[in-house]
Length: 338
Length: 234
Ligand SMILES: [Zn+2]
Image (cartoon, rainbow over all chains, first blue to last red; front, top):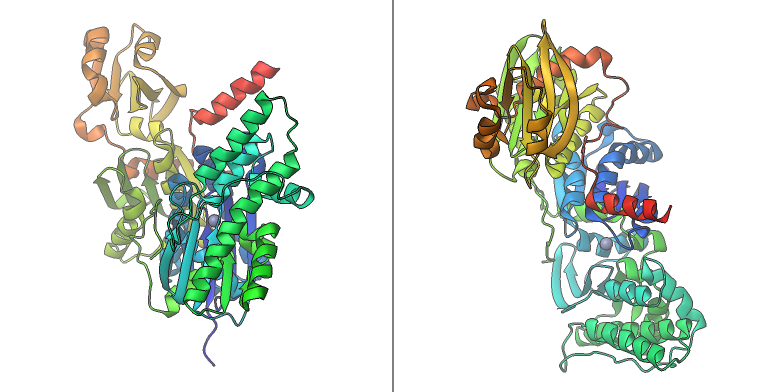
């Protein structure tokens, strides 16, 4: 039997300081997430300098907590994984500086991980027998990608947003509706009670056969609707607007994903990223998957948020495929996938 | 006792290793915005050359600011991780004190680091026998305010990277009683941080690899605005 590989992973790309310990890329021994959301909510969004300050305050405390919960010490670690981008530069720098120092101090290999790849790999943790190839939709506050995953470290980027990310549209519409930050979970909750057919918002499919997305037109349509209703003195039913907006977003996300899966004769669609926790998206995707005989997979809620376990999984699969970084590793704030 | 010290408060990344009174090695790079890439490889090169490794280090010193917020966090995160892995003590040293420590002078020593928009991070120091005493706490202020604040009857020696920006102006205002340090003493040197860390190791209070953070002096802009908003409400 081959020796187990223990990975220590660090994720600080945005407003979560997270450290995890994994065994062989799929088994989570610990996954500590320290969220700064209560601090950033006061500002109505993530403030980069504030996020960086919280990361440097927390990082070693969270590292120790992850080691303790996994019941290991630094000596047990075989591999270091760390997010190198995309993300906030100052925030990423705290994690990468810490990870590089640990890797050198322990004389162990280090892998700089693409955050988006991490979100995809969260599914390897959740679904122990999931293997590529599969169709993947990554949706989060900052990203919207349609990807065909050919192999563990081989991604074909098929579609992406041309303007706002899906999660960004949720935040902006939530703000216009007077709802708190972050907007996604609030709108998802309201949408369950609202009427999704109450307001006719546009479904933006772009040109025929395009796998790209655009959400800024939809956002503008919602803002226009709200302005007009206010001018006319009409009552705005927030839950109906939320439901109608969410439906317009998820219909496009789901239809494009199904279309790509069928085109590639892929029998599985994997959803990843923060918006993968959206129940409206999950249930519509499952309904359509049922109709088309496509299996739908997504991670549990905790693995949808930014977390270090997913970074550890990605680091492991890169490592066993020979993709290792060196001590000159640096952050790439606008890193692309593939 | 072997100490490894790091200073990344300014555009210079610098690390040094000392053993008791002896300098073993020092490596400084003046190359803008490359701290994150180069710092760990630099430290490795120094330690490799000395046939040492992180596990051989007994004490860490790190410049905690004021200076570039991002630079400070790179240095502090790196040193905290080293200290954490081998459970070693860590001493945070004021960047300004380390700069003043470069100089010996019979009068006031005023280090200054550029804080942009005509402002400098600065403090006032003086030697008393062989101890460097802090006379004015590190702060950030407009260069003109600083010049007015300085006592009239004393000789003054200034150093730091802000000297290159404000030299003529300072000379105009202060005339003969101001002296300028040699260029080599205007730069942050990890050697100063290392020696100060050794001197202070016994009375560092409770700083450790968990709680050590930069001394920003300036609060972040957003926090400042928030505080203003909150005090307006009150
Ligand atoms: Zn994310």
